[in-house]
Amino acid sequence: MSSQRELLRWVEREVLRCRPLALRFFHSARLRVERKPDRSPVTIADRVIEQRLRKAIARASPGERIIGEEFGASGRAGSSYWTIDPIDGTRAFSRGLPSWGIMVGRVERGRPVLGVIDFPALGTTVAVAPGVPAYERTAGRMRALPCPRPVSSLADAVIFHGGAQWWRPTRCFAGFQRVIAGCYLERAYGDCYGYLWLLRGCADAVMDHGVKVWDLAPLAALAVATGRVLVDCSGRPSFTGPDSIMASPSLARQIVKMLRRAS
Image (cartoon, rainbow, N blue to C red; front, side, top):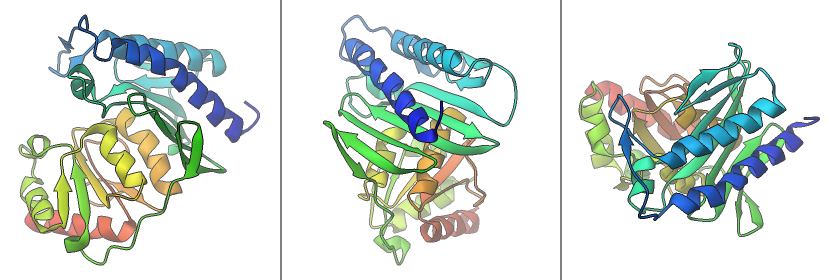
C-alpha cells in the first residue's frame, strides 16, 4: 500500500465485505455454539470471518505476523503485526443481540497505529490510521469522533464495563466496586459496544477484564487519536490485557488511584 490512508481504506473494505457474511449467521436458527478449551464460545461465523480476513491480509502483506482469536499466530515474529477478532462479542452474537463487532488492528514497531471496528447489526464502522483522524461511518455518512468531555470528578463520570463477573475473581474487584459505586452512572455494555459509546462521547470510561491483544489493539489506536489513553489497572499503557481502562488521561488516573487504594 502506498499510504496509510489507502491502507485504511483497504482494511475497511475487507472488513465490510465480511458484514453480509456475519449477518447471514446472525439470528440464524442453524447457528451452533461450541466451546473452546477455555470454555469460551465460538461459532462458524467466528472461524469463517477470521479465515477470510487472514487470507486477505496474507495476500496484501506476505509473511507478516497475524494474531487472531480463533487461529492464533502465523507469519514471522516481530514488533509489527496484525490482529483479528472476527466476532467480538460471540455471546451477544449467538443470542441475537446487536452489540458485537468485527475488529482488525495493526501494530507497528510495538505501537498500535490502525484500527477498524465494524458493527454489522448497527450499520456502523469506526476507524483510524496515522494521518487519518478517527471517524465513524454510518449509512454512508462520515463524522469525526470527538475528544473526551472534561470530567471534574468520578462522581460526574459515566462508566461502562463488561460485567462484574469478570472482575470478581481478581485482586481489583474491591476497587472496581468502589469505582462503579462512586460514578454518576454505570452500565454493563460489554465487548466493543461499550467503546462505541465512549468514542461517541456518551460515556467517559470503559473498564474491562479478561481481554486480549485482538480485543485491544484497534481500541488503543483509536484512544490515542481521540485524546484518550488505554492503560492497565496499574496505570501503565497496555493493549495486551488482561485488564484495561480506556478514558481521558485525568479520569484514567482517578480510576487507577481508586483501584490501587482498594487493593
